[in-house]
Image (cartoon, one colour):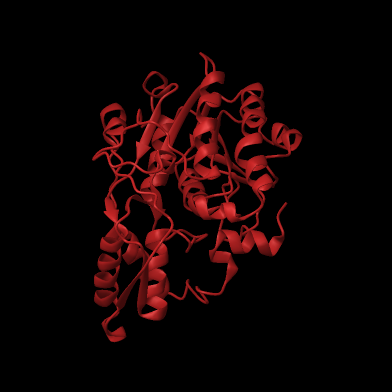
Length: 337
């Protein structure tokens, strides 16, 4: 689709999804500014590209963000303390980043002349649901501060949306697959890493249903929201997920793929342990298909294979011990406050 914007501002652009999205946007001809704390560095970003600008900054620094966002016409909000487990960190840290910083950021973007604001929420806002298909109007039942704040930020964006400022929200499923700044603390990636490194997968619980989304499909959804007609997305919320699978079934799939990719490793053992993480929900993503024709292209199996390729290429070195692959460990190491 034709580009509506030229200059895109991406908070959290040096994170897991951002590390794949930013090069993709540059390739599509956008000028991109990454605004990020750079806890994980930025060596994996295409820094030689003249259309890329990197600003080391914290979204809680409203004055710095307001200055940096000037001259941009689109804003992609990815920065946050990401995922439920990360809330093992100081509660005040998570509250200040995921909740308190949001409204000032939206106001700064609008004041700077940004025309479109895309907010990455999370499908974890649904908590636990036994409904066969959870659509966007399902009640939000947050189980943690992470999904509570994700849900609370959504109406704040809508409140600022008007004829000159388009606000759109997407609720991605749990992301999986290889990206340059790799996370190995997400369900499919965890199971694959354990199978590759230890020849053994430990499943916690197993019956929980989780929706999954390949990181490439996540990036394609963001790019689509940058090009979609305003009238189709203004103040809208879209689920973005693909395969809903139980953790136990994902483990079986991971074992199959790893055995195919690395027959020399022999069998991969699956061990089941109890879990207190009861989040279970089956999301329906028909709305974004009806509105924008968006359909994910990559399966969980594709995600597992992409991690196998990365492992073979030596990109998963010290994958159990290197903090860089793990959000909480890195933030504790940096003593982030």
